[in-house]
Amino acid sequence: MAQPVLSRRAALGMVGLAGLATAAGCGNSVGGGPSGGSGSSGGGAVKVGLVIPQDGVYTPLGVDLRNGWQLYLDQHEGKLGGYEVETVIADEGEGPDTGVPAIQGLITRDNVDLLVGIVNSASALGSVEAIAAAKKVLVIANAGAIAVTGQARNPYVWRASFTNAQAAFAMGEHLAGQQPEGGVYLMAPDYAAGQETFVAFKEAYVGGGGTIAGEALTPFGTTQDFQPFLSGIPGSGAGATFVFYSGGEAVDYVTQYAEFGLKDTVPLYGSGFLTEGSVLEAQGEAALGIQTALHYSTEIDNAANADFVAAYSDAHGVLPTCFAVQTWDSALVLDLALAEAADLSGDAISDALAGLGEISGSPRGPWVFDGQTPKQIEYLREVQQGDGVLINAVVDELGEYAQ
Ligand code: PHB
Image (cartoon, rainbow, N blue to C red; front, side):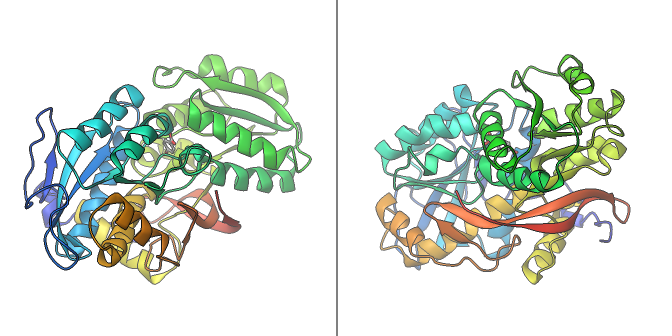
């Protein structure tokens, strides 16, 4: 893939801000008409609350999520389903202490019609009740917590991303097929996403005859030095390590894994967030050869992905990520659903989402809602040197995964 060229818009620093406002305690907004369920399909305005991290470990994901959302709007005259979109951004921060109030503020203070976003599983789990009470649709654009569209589901919480189980289960099956001598060592941050990753990986890998050499859950958001945890790996006899880390933690983990001398002795595998986007650039050579499972790669060969990669690279001067795809797809499903919904109530939008059938035109390839979560292909990816930039080359398709 050719190295992306920095566009004039990106160079001018004017990327993706038209129509976006930041909720800063008093609910300011731009670019929209009346709020709170104005208009009908084919006219009027819809006010969307975009909840993304602008602080903490997952800040880089927030940038990509905002860019993916804005790219879709830029490509569709700023409209979804015929409604002029006004976006109000709220800072999710690192976890539920900030994420849940951000959601509540968008509902009560900004009176948004619907919500998109949420990176952290714990923030998503903490928001489910508020969303059910408000009867507003939330399209989760990242957080993989299984329960929000499973055991704790309500009709208003949808997901255009993944569950934490999908990549972990796919990689568990894959490594069960490989049977690395000495078994697999597991590491992840100690909160819902890491815990669910362990459960799903073990179900597939141990269920497939593999052995766990050891495991460590690391404190989330406060671990900068992974050496005390990495030191458990050499003595365990593990033949491979499988991890879930993302954002700032992924950069620290991968660079320290190489510095500790493990890169060449115990191959590193992960859920694909480990090597996604700007974190891959920061990891540099330390990431070469890492294999991950994910529902997206810039290298997936389909026309929608080629268009998406070209448009995103042109706008931002870097390759897109799964995070950008997830907000782009959130906009796509809302575009389709709002065109069908009788009005902007949560019930009408939820009914329309339920009736969408196969979603075509996504950069990740066609997918369907299984319940309220995507059923999609997991790809086996490997970090390789591309044309002047590191890429997650697609090595194989691991299969289709639901909840
Ligand atoms: C999550 O908390 O569910 C989560 C966070 C970051 C990721 C993926 C999942 O990259």
